[in-house]
Length: 86
Image (cartoon, rainbow, N blue to C red; front, side, top):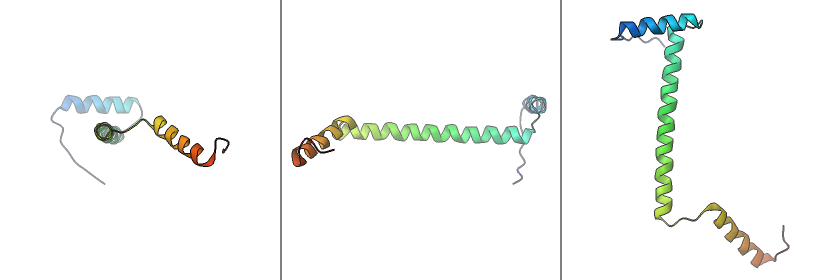
């Protein structure tokens, strides 16, 4: 897909072009990489915020630690089927 945009900072463009050329890449490659990294960071930020909200909800609802939950399940199974069951 072709996209055209104007940079307001000509010095920025010249610096990017020179750095890209020095590393054997095109400005397009650098811009694509920068945009992909920006999207990744944005998604990571959203994921972290969603995880924090889920943790707050879990704590509000009186959740228990996973280790405690599984120990409770194991104790119930031992009580139901005996202590020697694998």
